[in-house]
Image 1 (tube, rainbow, N blue to C red):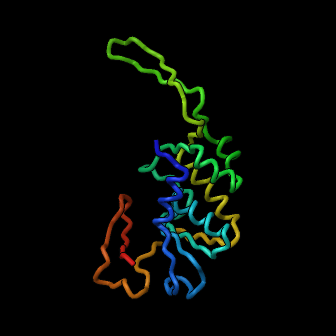
Image 2: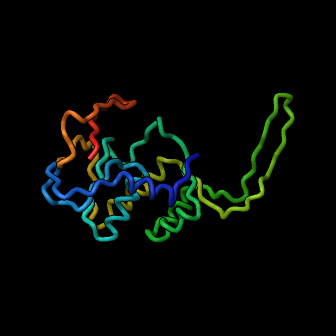
Amino acid sequence: GHRAGLNMWCLALVLVAVVEAMAVVHPRAYDCVVAGGGPAGLAAGIELASLGWKTMVVEKRAAFDDFDKNKAFHYLIDVRGQRWTDRHGLTEELQRQGVPSANQTITRLFPDLKTTVVTPPLSAPQGIWIPRAQFLTVLAQKARATPHLHLRAGDALEILPGPHSQEEEAEEEEDANGQRSKTCRV
């Protein structure tokens, strides 16, 4: 599984591109553009918009809550993440759709077919396990309802205009689904 929470928020900040002139979409229409609409990108967009920034999240998938078979894993929303989800009113819905990490057992089956059940001592505060697809759905619903936040799916940022981006520096990539995009450092 993957951990979500403060680490997700920190990673999301890395994805945020603050652009003064957004000629890609609408000149000066947004204070901030977030590249990528996964959990980290949606969380960054929600956070920035809640701070009053006009924000756009751009995702190359056709929809923000599309199921991606290559990313069919679970997230653990730990205590740090729950502070963020509490602030944005998402914890109750995540608890409803997820599974608490409390009272879990680990069952080990050995080659000699002897079964041992081990209940690990949980010294850390409890979290919520939730499949990525459900987590994305909850975040996308919140993002759609957040003022100052615009979601743009089925599109990709290729090159952001600016003094440091030049066509020859762009690297063309193809993802597992055959979608091509260009990436340029700005």
